Image (cartoon, rainbow, N blue to C red; front, side, top):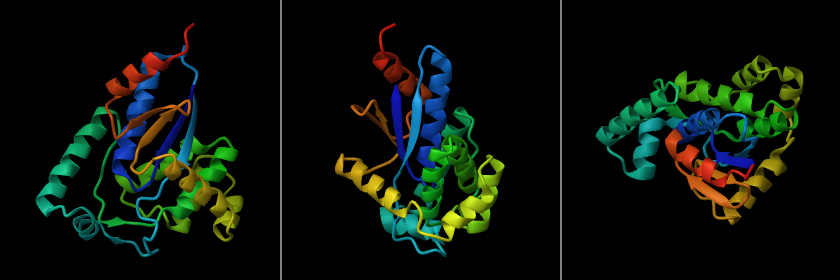
Length: 209
């Protein structure tokens, strides 16, 4: 089974959804063989390098009040805890394009899943800037990627067109919110669903033994 996980590092529900999906896969066990691919989506492609205040950004973009934002964060903490993901304090939102470039490269190197988890934890748990070159280089090294090659990618335009092309392709296929989980190119599950929802869907779509 092929699973394309369309998401953004800056998306908290993507962290919930990924960990819920992986929890569901563990419950199903080895009888389901999965190829998991991470596809890029930028919630804020025009975000400047210096980022923006998170509360101000969300209030402007979604019209959410501070009380609503606090309630949403409480919900995220609870849903994250249910799937083993910890949400910490975050006060800014950042540009994630370079992170997506490195994720594309990591996929070629067989380390995409590890880097995705490292990026999600760096931002959503530790509140760090996932667009900062020094952080990106450190995370690449920590997951076993060549830090020198990562630095060369960041200093160049490598994989920029591949990321843009992939983003455009998924948008043309109707993906306009994340996380979006596409199974075998035909079945779509959207949002940070609980593990039970993913498990039901995956069992229903499993190839017959």
